[in-house]
Length: 175
Image 1: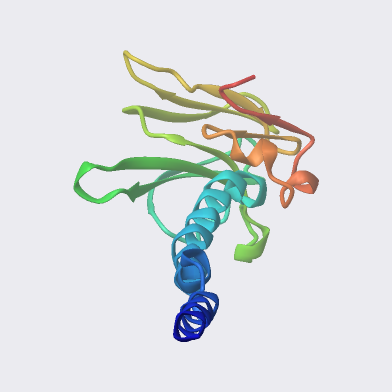
Image 2: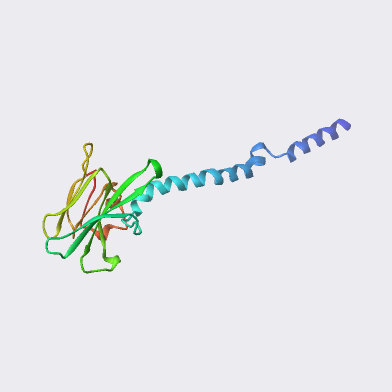
């Protein structure tokens, strides 16, 4: 009878012990939330960022120079915005605004690209602006109709859901 009681007592202790996965489940769940959820959010951020991109740069950058149109109605301004610290570079932006309008909300950004070294603005006609941005290794020179076209060297503006109503034709290096 003592053997029977010992067998019952050992089987009851075996039944009361939880399996390894059940004992570790709270730790694994916490580990999953602390590692995989932030990792997923980081990957989603970098993959979805182009679809919510805008040309907004919050008035950053130095005005390199400006050029009025032939009839004086518009003024094109080219800005340089540094990025990336010591190993970074400069992104250039071209804004077009009506010459007599001082309201900053009516400024239209039509060009964004990496600075390649040689920059120049030239009005081809009243609404067509030639933007030169070139070096011996690359050339992102564009001729844009300021009413209908924009250029984005990254290509994000062409994919952006927030900018669809701001242009008729979007140009990027992929096209």
